[in-house]
Length: 239
Image 1 (cartoon, rainbow, N blue to C red):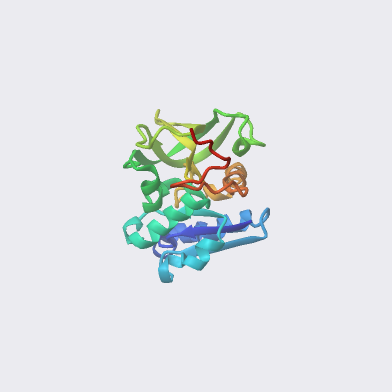
Image 2 (spheres, rainbow, N blue to C red):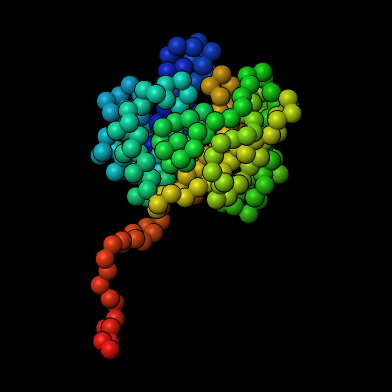
């Protein structure tokens, strides 16, 4: 399996707090723990040529993990469309935290993907609401995160194919924080936690969810549908 972790890599260059937490970038931290399970994990960032998402790179990628926040608008429409098409063709997509506003995710959802938010060091409790799903394998009833950014409902996404996690925040809000979608031949997993000023991606249970999500999102050589005018498989008797 070829996994690609994409990150804007802007906060780490502009904010000392983020740089101290993620000295190798958020993408570096995620790639490091994914590398424990997958020997081929690469990274790409916004300021690379074509945002590091050339046709060659995308065609080799089985699962793309996407983190973005402050520079969604800087992702070119052409690249965003290519990512969308690769998902429709079967590439898995794991969308993390504020990448709910990324161009590829919004294109695939067809909605605003807007929500409520607050940065106030809320405690977050992520409840597992589908304990039988492969992405929740190995977890307990819930995951506690000491401090996180709050996301609150209403989350303007289509009804998920599967709802896996619901978060409760210390300030009182709840949020659909783990959801799956299928688009074309591709599988999409959205997972909420991961604000850049908190060390969330070092949390072992958060890492477990993302690892499971990558494994789930890979396309296991499902058949490619054929559309349009079709010749009969059997002889049609003329009357």
